[in-house]
Image (cartoon, rainbow, N blue to C red; front, top):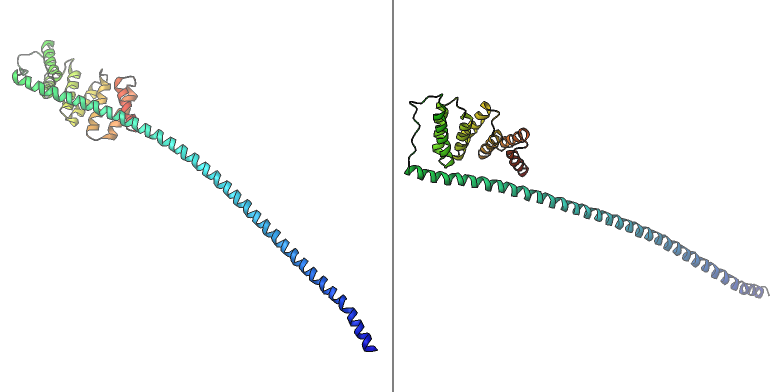
Length: 260
């Protein structure tokens, strides 16, 4: 009887125990499911943060690219402006050298023509005797003869005639012009150092010479031909400062602008 009662009690307890085990398993699954939900929510939050950070980075990168594009456009504009300025300067410098070359060629052609003419009709040399230094007539004739040689392109003959004039008539009213003519003839003969010295001497003895601005411009030309570019720029700047309204100053400004 006792054994039967015990067996009955065990049978009655088994369903209750089975129900207990089922609730525990369900709670466990619910807990695991909850943990998975939390893990997924945490991962989703992290992923959302990463996406937002990446989006922010992309926006920052886009802003940097736009800023760089703006700088590139600005630099391109500056480059085009510099290129235009350089082209303009090169054109002006080229025009100056073309003009200078044309002048030299004109001198050379005139000199050859004068030599041919002089060969056919020799120029009578200036005779020192029997002339009164105070008589203006011989001075005028001597100066006009030297000037005619220069105008005809006979620079060698003009240089000699002007030198002879300056020796004989050192007190003449034509002395300054004779020195200027001598320096021009020396320049045409490409004796640049001697020509510069003659120009400098002219300015030293006659600072108020009517063609002083042209003299300074020619001095700069001598210096440039001797590759003394720094000295030439200095002379041109002095010319512009001293004779700003002269035609020579206009040419000097063009050269200085082209040399920048």
